[in-house]
Structure formats: C-alpha cells, structure tokens
Image (cartoon, rainbow, N blue to C red; front, side, top):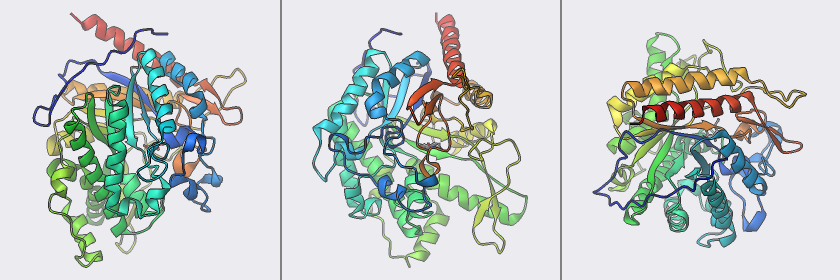
Length: 468
Ligand code: NOJ
C-alpha cells in the first residue's frame, strides 16, 4: 500500500490566464465508474429518486427489469473499493456524484449527501489517489424531470447551483472535473431514441436537451474560473468514428449525417461555437423555424476548457436503410466484444488526428476505454479474461503510439473498476477489472486486473528511468 498523502498544488488562475499543464507532466493512469452504476442504497441519507429509477420500471427498457437498487453496494463498501484501486497502483479515480444525493429537492442542499463524497475523497487522499469528479453522469433528479428536465432551460440554472455547491465543498480536493459525461447519450439516447432515461422519442426534445446540457457545461466552466478554482475542468464526449458500410453514395451521405449528430453537434459547438448545418436544417424543418437560440448561448458553450475527455470503445459502420430514409449499423467485420462492438484500436488514432486537425489542440484524456466479455468465476476464484487483456493491451499501446506522434493524450482511465449496472443492459454485461458476484457482492480480481497493475507499474518504472 502506498502511504504518501496526495499534496494539492494550489494554482490560482483567471479566465485570461488559463494554465495548460506543461507536456512533461507524468501520464495519469486511472480507473472509472459512475454513481448510479455502482452505489446502490438509493434511499440512503435523504437521497431522492433520479430519472433512472422509473425508467428501470418501464417494461422492456432495461434487461430483465434490473434496477440500481443494490448495484455494487459501493455506498457501503467504498473503503474496501478504494483499497482495490490502491492495490492496482493507479494514480487516479474518476467517479461521478449523484445529484439527487446532493440536492434531493429543488434548491435544498443535503449535508448527508455530500458527506459520503467527502469521506470517499478522504479515503482516496490517504492512499495518494487523485480524485477526478464527473458532475453529471445521466442521473437527473426526478424533481428536475417533473419540470421538463433538460428540455427546460431552467435546468441549466439548477445544474449551475449544483456545480457551484460542489466547487465550494470539494473544489480544493479534486484534480480533474468533468462537467458532463457523454451528452450525446443523455441528450439523444434519452430524448430522441428513447433508449435511456427519460425515454423520449423526439428530435426537437433531443436537440433542446443537448443545447441545455452544453449550455450548462459552459456556464459551469465560467463559474469555475470566476471562483478561481484549482484543478482543471473539461467535458467528456463519446467518440465512435463512423465509416460507410459500402462505397455507395447513400451510405456515404448517411455516415456524414450520423457523424454530424454524434460528433460534430458537440465538437463544433464546443470548439467553434456553431451547430452543424444539417442538424439545424432538420431541427428548423421539424419546428417550422420556431426554435430560437438565445444570442449569446454559443459563446457560453464554447467557453475555453483545460482539456477534452474522450470515451472510446469502438468504431461504427453506417448503412442506409432500404428506401433511403434513416440509417442502421452495418455488420461487424472484425471480432466483437460482448456488446457486439468491433475491436478497432486504430479508429481511436484516426479520431484523435481528426480532433487535432479540425477542432482543438487542448490536452486530451481518454476518460473511458474497456470491454465487456462474458466472464466466469472459476472454482479457484480466478477469472481468465484473456480477451479483455488483449483489448486493453492493444488500446494502451495505441494511446502511446498516438502520443509518439504528438497526440498530447495526458491520461487513460479504464472502464471500469468493477462490473456494474450497464444501463439498458442491466447487469448482463461485465466491463470490470474486478468481477462482482451479485449474490454475495464480493469482488474478485480478473486476470485483466493483474495485467493493468503490472502494466502501470512497468510504465512508471520506465518513466522513472528516463527522468534526469
Ligand atoms: C460510457 C458510459 O459513460 C458508461 O456509463 C458505460 O457504462 C460505458 N460507456 C460502457 O457502455
């Protein structure tokens, strides 16, 4: 066990004087989780429901009606869980905060709710692990949804109140802040495709939700600067580089459109202050031009960040539907994970190169990467997950190859510390380094946990050798 106490470097900064960490700072290795996926104990210490509780109860939305009620019981077992992170020897832990623990009711902060995270952070600090916080990982409090949730502009103010409270309470103890995790999922999967909570199916609501999510991000970054916080702040986007399934003109066009919705909608807004033309044309057509954006919104959304977080798992093949309306996924061409996702490390390189040439030069963190495979707990309590080990090895090597050609990736967070609630897939998909036996709630290290531990140790040894 490492005993060093993590020392916070106190850095003051203003908007005009943004500090970009110099390139020679050590690469950060970490693991990641999110609140609803692991905590359980949904009614403990004054927490009120989030939008995922009712969503889990809708028939056929979540695999076999699984819920977040117990999850991994992390709320009770957080000390032991931090000792697992310590055992891995990683530098940092990315976790999210449950908004409905902090504000169980509108404008009413709950001291019991923040206490859990203060204790978690203390535990991390005592073991020298950097706390990295996602403010919003999809679990909107139900009270906010009852007033329209992310489709209501007021949600931006509620988020800002919540973010400000976190900056005040734990701002001096957090290394990296992520305002939002994958706004594509909370916006489009939740409001247009009906696959995530709150389960709407409307293009207009999806666009409105995305706009408000991004606006709340920009406002939180501004507030972070005004409060002269230490640490760094950014947003996390999902990237799934898209390729046409065939060389047909139709597949090519569909791919461009799918890319506009899943990537450019976010990257252009954040780094250029505009939305893609094709998305705006569609939204204007569907709303008969009635949806008007406020004049300074795009300026707020493109408020400069310290870094960009990227979640990367796979690429996507886009196939135009028969009749030419809409698109679907093409058949995989290479081996897939248990999610049916192709294993394609080079597509990450292609995407980083694109981000660098078209959008931004700010530092990048890989905030999630990992794979679900059907794991089996052997009689000797070992889990031989060679496929996951290979997946991780190939992606870690790719990250370093990208850096060798100037990619400026500053860290890698593996998804996930342990198996957990995989949203609409319930507990049927296992992404963890630790296997969770959901009957006993015991955790067991998989072979991939030993692999990651050795990998991180070896990288650190190499780095130390290179230090003057
Ligand atoms: C991205 C999400 O942030 C996380 O919650 C999810 O479990 C992983 N992808 C795997 O699908």
